[in-house]
Image (cartoon, rainbow, N blue to C red; front, side):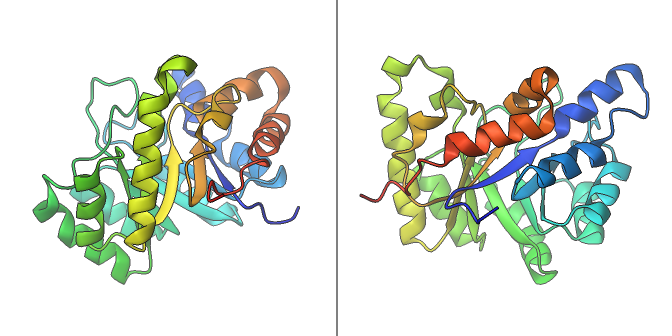
Length: 247
């Protein structure tokens, strides 16, 4: 497969969710990750949460060892998880907010309000060769704060956009476009994710400078019906029309 203009990182957390529902050793997170790679995914994303509700520590080490593409480790700024990240050495970490009672990540990280606590971990991980990304809402202050603390990358939270009916997405799309442009001007790589699926994906194609989309729940859900290779292939095909939104 030729390198796509827009890269796909597949989040396989919910393969682990299915496994944890019965406490079995199947389905295999590693097997799912390898199937995604074989179908053309450019990277694998896993979220090691503090409550370990899906991905477990052993999964992180096993996926790091087995995959041949990039590993993106989503994580909270928690000392224990930071130490695991430094030990595992993923290609990238994406710092996200966490609340134990949430079903999934709600909203972006408040980088501007927590800069003092983020500076040290960001520096340590960057010094170890890990690219650090901030999962943030498309807010100018949060984008500037991400650059200020030395994060070379942001992931724009697309959840608010995806949750709205198509006719009401205009304002959120404008925020995403403006955020991507600001990040690009600051020299930051722009990724995006949360809530994206085959039905709403093309709606964000006006957002410029996107490098990678990290998509999980919709791909795993589709894979239940058609298999992981087919689900990944379908998402990659849906991404092909993206031109960078620069025209």
